Each structure stands twice: as structure tokens, then as C-alpha cells.
Length: 268
Image 1 (spheres, rainbow, N blue to C red):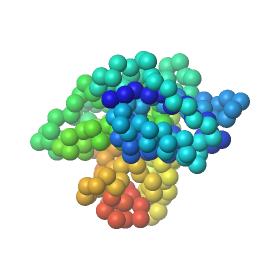
Image 2 (image 1 turned 135 degrees about the vertical axis):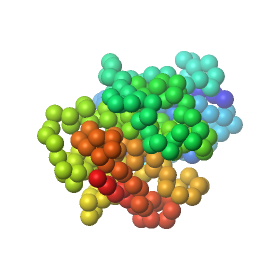
Image 3 (image 1 turned 60 degrees about the horizontal axis):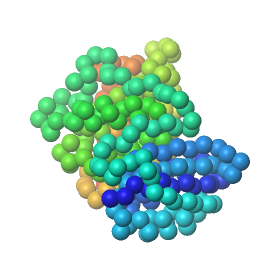
Image 4 (image 1 turned 90 degrees about the vertical axis):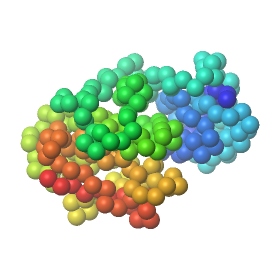
């Protein structure tokens, strides 16, 4: 395994990290850290990745020839030792620090659905290490979550990603929406869940349901609904208004099963 740092210059910021991160993951590499900033050259994205040495030349070619990339540099990353350790904390867009995502106020160990009691246990230490990184990188967090999903045993994916989503959603609610008044469920979806989701994905409302066209968790080669993080985050966002037992989020359609878009419905 090798650790490599890529420096990319582009004229476009929106979607840059997601697009290039998908190339990184598709070629068998893991994104360890990233940083994006504006400069006189344009938008500069630095990525540290880890993966098989035999695939490095192919990855470099695909990144260097990507239509969003104006210039591209690659160099060996000296900060890593090649060990399969958890990614180090990241600073995003030059920010000096960011708040940790706190555990839910009610019952941290029981924040996920009750069905988790019979599922494989969540790797709590790994989750708690990841959450501060997500807080620092937010909203550029989907690549880290897709990489985590690929690494998790299938029996742990749904419970772990829903739990992380619930924690992130509760944190975003407290940070951005907690000072607002109490809203009916329909208005909470429109004024809280929708704008929060639009920081991450392409979301729209249709008949009181939320539709997402570009969930990065789809088409992973397995059957069934798979947007567990997004479902958990929607629950975390709405629980601040309606309580943990006051709203249920259901993914009624998923692109992973052939639907045009992923559809989330809300039940009080």
C-alpha cells in the first residue's frame, strides 16, 4: 500500500471533491484527508489517498485527464507510515477547528433503531473517531462515508451508518435550526430537512416526500434500499422538533432498486 498526495487545480468548486473522490474510490484507493481552498490559480484541492501501488498509475491518469482538472500534481506523502490506521483529523477550507458532534441528549447508546439489539455491534470507537472529522469537513463528508461503508462488514452497515447519520443530523439541527419555533412535521421537512440535505445532495420535495437524485450510496452491487446514512440524518434533523418517537423516516424508493430517485417519506 502507498500513501500519495494529489494537488488539483480547477475552475469549479461545486461537485469537485465528490467527482474526484469517486474516481479515487473506484480505483481501489481510500481518501485519508482532503483540503480545498481558493487561490489565484483557481480552486485548489489537495487529497491524501492510500491504496495499491500497482493501481497508482491508472489513478493518476484518470485524475489528470478528468474534465474538471486544469492542472495536476502527485507526490509521495511523507506523513503516513502505510499502516491501515484510521484517517487522521482533517482541517477543511483553512478552518482552525470545529466542534465535535455530541452524542444525542437522550440515550447515546440507544440512538439507533431498537432492531440493532440483534444486529452486529457498532464499532463505537471507530465511530467516535470519525465524528469529529465529519464535523470539521462538513458538508464535504460523503466520500468519507462511502469509503467507510465499503470497509464495514455487511452486517454492520445499516446500523452504523444510520447511527452516524442520526448523530450528524442532530448536530446540524442544534447548530443551525434549534432557535426556531416548533413546526408541524410538513413544515419541518420543508424548512429544516430539505435545506440541510441540499448541502450534501440534490434534494427536492414532492407530495410531502423528499426525493434525492444523486445519493452516493446507490449502485454498490447489493440489493435493497441502501441510503442508511441519509435516512439516519433526516431522523436526527427532525427529532429536534418532534422527539425520537415523534417521527419515522422511511426510504420508500431507492435508485439501488431501480427507482429514478431515492424517496424518503415521513410519518408522525
